Length: 475
Ligand code: NAD
Image (cartoon, rainbow, N blue to C red; front, side, top):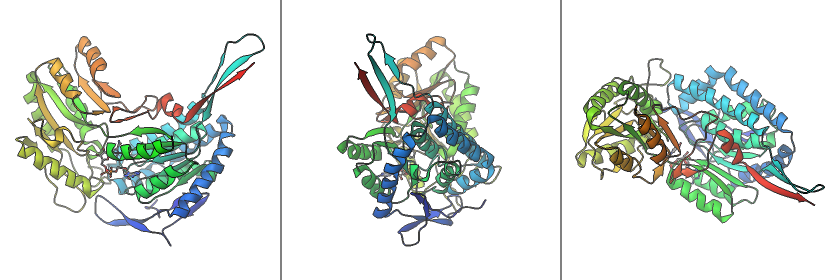
């Protein structure tokens, strides 16, 4: 399958760039244009809204078993085309093919999970005197407006479409401009698996124009956004004007605590892989490493040695372990953060520069002894950059970890049962990995606290976020 023509899907029709504003889609590994992204006009968005209104009436009345069957078939559709679809995602987003395949399998699992979980949107019957009862019903909230970012171009759309569709909602999805074809593939999987065309629309465009238009409409009852905290707050403001429920998965700045008693080899294996996965463009990427003094030098030296040895290249090349950054603006951000950190006295242990070739390639980077006033200690790098700082005591490590307004993911490595309990209790984060970096399972709630957002995706919480509760009292 070659890189497809980019088209929107609105009310049963695939619509291209002809007669519309558009922008190029670029392969981040080569800098070459690979496609043309159509921008939805106001009339297109109105059509999508009208379809969502009709689609919701139809889909909420469809038995949950039938909805589940569509999602299960869509999961199979993706799995059976894994090689072709993963290749498309890598071409437009950059991550190595092996990583894209894992993302695709997780996206398929997610669709299937929401189908199954949608069958269990149980209510309850409250005990009342004979002849009367009170019912508690779970119903789909209504048409959802969903905005997915570019770092997981298959996984993010699958989470948002799966939750809405599994709950019985209709949905309008705006996938990322940078990597639009992957979401088209998820949409095709659903449509070819029997999803009625008015239940889902896929639109592209200028993000602010699209979100303002959709959130101003009385049709939309729920907003689901994954992206930066700044944009998330802006969208929450728009949503609050109409009292729309929101699920917000925003920025993070994950701390990693490595204690003297940790299995350092395990911590190195897991955190090097996790840091440079997807070139660090992951909201739960481990970023601020706090290493206890006894193992600090060993950990930093070995982490940097392994980082520097990672083969960086085109994600289509089987030897590649880290691909390009998806957008040139992330390279600019890396440059700014590294220069700023060095000006405050931080030590550049490895990396810290662009790689001189076409595409957006940045070296795996490690900074050590970074002063607190360096911007990178407070701003999410969203790139292949780890910062290392030593600590003496448990309390000091917890205080540093909790210092920022973010609270998405946090990690700790220790072999002390007491410390395992304490870090779990004291770290301020929505997701905590202790002696592991695996926090993304489909049955585990994925979401943050503090300014990292609210609400969860995946798990029963992800479905619940697309349901409302109704009480029916019968005398
Ligand atoms: P950005 O804030 O410009 O864009 C992030 C995403 O939000 C993009 O997909 C974009 O299309 C969308 N967006 C922007 N303005 C919007 C609007 N008004 N309405 C609807 N959608 C809008 O940042 P960027 O340079 O693309 O990415 C870097 C930052 O974004 C990172 O620092 C990170 O915090 C955040 N981000 C987070 C995640 C995540 O998984 N939580 C994913 C991607 C980006």
